[in-house]
Length: 310
Image (spheres, rainbow, N blue to C red):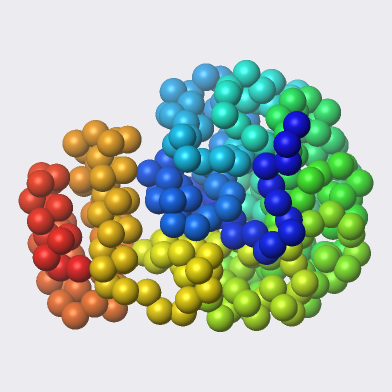
């Protein structure tokens, strides 16, 4: 089987973000430069108990290649069943285990970053994914600990489970999204293991990505929140440019808008409001624009507004 992921150049990966990285958004960043796209986090329970909404979250755009589905879970048998369901779905190239989500409802359920507090449990769940996964790749997304930083221990456990790469957000669970990102911890993980390591956390622009890659020696960067309202960050990274034209921004925003309508139907216009709030940040007249947008549900009118404003 041909290797779909090429680590010879630093990779640009879109992080999974609940409520944002749906198919339309992923298809846009894919077109404009992301190397790998990953689904929103999928609950193993929801998948196994046949949630329709969950099945729709797994759908991918034809351009998404390679495409990885991220699952969360804390019970080996449920995780196994979830993996077996994914095995039967075409077009998925890998399965990623979420060991990093700090959200209370995920953590309190024993999933996400909770696994970092019990490395035996982490190993058990990750080995289950590895054992039953028939897709090309098994990967893991982690943080550097729950309260204490234990980056090297985590990296070694994950590597021992036979994963193809590890993506690491350089904060503990306690650090949420506010504490400074510990790039030293990412560098230590990279030195401690022989598998590729992808750096994640506060990578907001081209300069920062370059700096993090140089400092940590990571094999790529994973960008999440910085891509919301600025999906052209992948275009900048891919083309090595710091500034991007207003025309290119407008093209990307309209491409995203059309993709949302195509996937979600007419309701997509209402869903796109929150995205336009992000896109319009920093523009002159943004507050007024948002007020008007909040009252528009007609796709044609919204498209005109976007073309005129941007």
